Length: 154
Image (cartoon, rainbow, N blue to C red; front, side, top):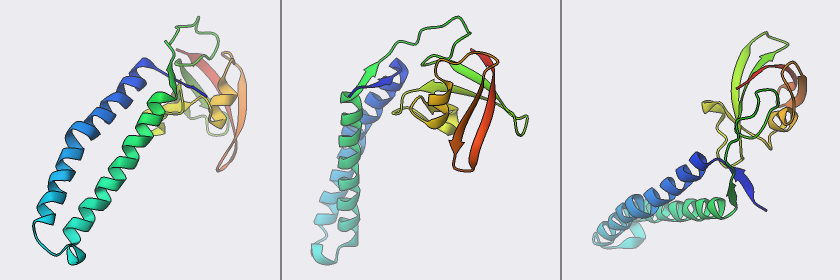
């Protein structure tokens, strides 16, 4: 199954993968080699830590490769500003608190709530898809059911 991703999100995955392979991995390998030169590996905490870091890095590289393989670049189409589509930004008003937020709807591999990017597969993302300005959406969140009104589609 392929997951949608923006061109920018795909490039970011490739850049992170390249950084891990070409910059971080050689540094860890060098640290392992230096620690190995210190002698007895059975009591060498520096060696153990470097090996553990290398294993973690290898897992992250494999995850990124899988994400890249399983993603499909979807060019963001600028809609008419009336319907929520992949890649658009949505201004929402929380009907319980009157607080307004703006989210961009992206694929699961590039969602980052701290940056205002929500996955179209998340509860709020699924509730937003194909909706229009003025629509109210409700979805289950960890703190209970939330209700928002779509104020603007950008």
